[in-house]
Length: 433
Length: 109
Image 1 (cartoon, one colour):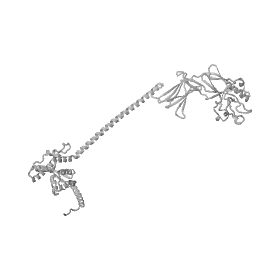
Image 2 (cartoon, rainbow over the protein chains, first blue to last red; image 1 turned 135 degrees about the horizontal axis):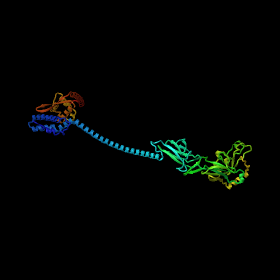
Image 3 (tube, rainbow over the protein chains, first blue to last red; image 1 turned 90 degrees about the vertical axis):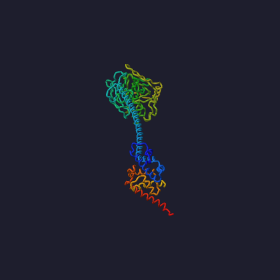
Image 4 (spheres, rainbow over the protein chains, first blue to last red; image 1 turned 30 degrees about the vertical axis):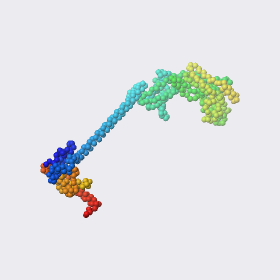
């Protein structure tokens, strides 16, 4: 008596799985079928109607397929959940893999960008190296392997292709140091002052002529692995000329020893639009007298004689000569000299028995009349050129002749000098003065 | 009986029935109904999932026998099942005593 068709129970099962035990479905079907068979037999004891008995069993039992499915799911639950967990893990891993792939792609892109930038930087460096190499070739030091930086100064006379200028001291100074590093090299017979290997940095140099003129300052930057060669065109050595300097002073004043005091500025000579300057004191003063001219101390330096400290000499303005009287002097022909600021002076007078500078030519300014403040302490004096007559002359000596430079003296100065000497008579100066 | 009252005690009842000797599903249901004087009616939809659950927990051991040409699945109690049954019965008795103490003894009339 078959109560349940196995297919009816099996209808509730899900599709077969590879991981389920082979006897699971049959075991469930057999167990439930046995239960239903027992239940039917019990019902048949109460009623002979098989159909009615079966109906009552089913009503009590419920849906056999549903129960079979529940039991199957219960048996497979751990495997189902394990499978779902594995699927979830695989999905997560797939997402992670995609993310990693994305990150890897991004990293590759970044690396490509960085590599491109590095290549560009390398190309720039190579370009710089090539430029430096070209600079070395153009400077005549095409030597390989690269040599350290060096400095040479090539001196010529008159033009860039002129004769070498030898025996010219070149003073090189590295900038940025206090005190600066200074080196001096004389140019050799090829006109080259070679300073050899030098540190990279900023430099300046000047060139001196054997005849005491100095070039303008040249600044440059020494780059790595560059042999810096600077070419300087020097003025030719000037010839020597004879120069006489006189002042247009009337005879009556000449007899009283009146002379002209002027300021002589350092000479300059221009070469290739560069001005070379005489290496002389920035301000020199000349006293031009009938007997000749001489260089004197700066008026504002020696105005108080030592006699004044003894109380036997009025504290007055004195100008002290430091050389011998010159009548005709050998002068450099070519450089331009300028004369500025005119004053009239007379030999200073001293009390009898004064043992000071009586053997030195000492002068007093009479015109323009010195300011009173000039007789105060030296540091309280004003500009010593303030009380001068405006004068601006330029002289250039020519070789092969006597150059006569005459300092003109305006009539009003002569008149003031005469009035001063009339009010302050002076003895006729001796030859010693 | 209210199924909520039966909830949580089905497994204890099954273990108790099986503790008397190997038996099978239909007989377990009949025994519970008989011993409870008809107050407890184990539905098959609850009985078999509970049996399989206890089997998976190693509290029951199942085996098959052929009866009248059919395969029948028998269950017997394992050692762990016996210990679990003892513990469940002790807990139930304590719980029932507590409930009884609260509800009080049934009135005579």
